[in-house]
Length: 221
Length: 252
Image (cartoon, rainbow over all chains, first blue to last red; front, side):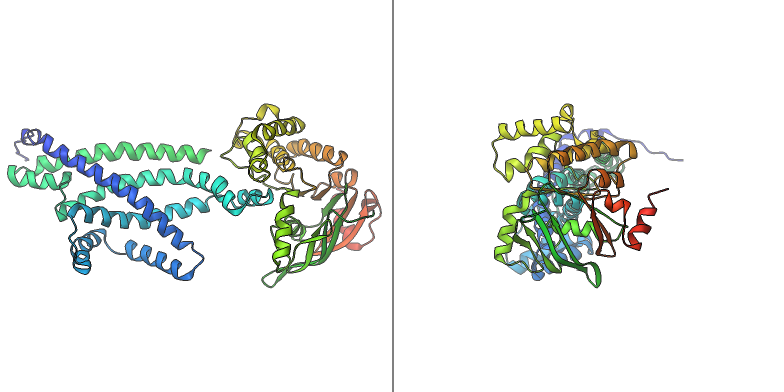
């Protein structure tokens, strides 16, 4: 019923080409994660600020980003930002900025729940012993909050590996884009995109599993 | 009883929103006093203790330490700096221990001496080891709190409070979260401290401790001090109906 002559050699023939794309995928994901962690911290600090205007800005960024599609955000960064600021933005830079902004909005929540997961009693104990608010944050709250945020941050990295495939739309030469280019020349979309899907899976699945184990171990403590 | 109280609640009233939790509570704690505070839940005992610990501000009235105001409804600069100066001289032991889980027992003990008192590390460690020996937990020096039983955690928490050499130690239902068989080991440590002359304010449900170790017991109900008496007199000759009824619950 399904007579199809598989021609995997068309994929193996371009293995290096596709792996070059994978390298780009991982570089984009890592760079975006770093940027998103910094952006997330800024948004979290805005959210928790004493000043209403800053809180309002932080909350607005989060709401806008969480309630519009990421693809639209990417297109917006790539096509609209250059017009507004009359600058040229490389596709790669646009991809990293767009993804980082999106992910920062989620990571800010990760930070916030990490900080809030530290029981109030631990802070009160520090207060009664005479530690200053800054000392108590640095020595008691932060170390515990960071432990809680590491697994979610790793999950964000997995998400970024997948989201970075959207770079294909703005012609960033990551693995999905290279697959599109390859299948346009070898006319073998089945082999090409199946291979690419397997590559994503082989990277994301073990990571996701490891993170799940890690989270379970943290919760057991 | 003469001289200036170590700590004193002076006509303290505390409201949360419209809910009045404490009404004009005055309570002095003299040096070497072991004042036990008993009463039904919701009577304001814990709130009073938290006012002494500077974790809550009174809505009206003052907290004084050795005659110096350290807390009022709206503390001015002078009171705030007085509070900062004596903050670590008021130790507190919590119902749920509140040990820092990311630090070992030893690290829990030396954290405040190192950061607040700027003690030298070797000095702080030596002191912490001595305190651990005192609460009979020398072998747990490098363990993390999760590995300890509730009774052991609470004894570490007591040692941690003692590491700041407080002038008064506040206990907030320190044994309430523990299984009966673990309470004893904590009560033994508390009794030992009392015998060594530590000034203590103990919110508790342990009537045996109040009777035999407390120098004075205070009965609180609905945010007020209803009755107080030294040692056994509190239990043997209650004056008010409310206290009589309260004590009857413990007779069965």
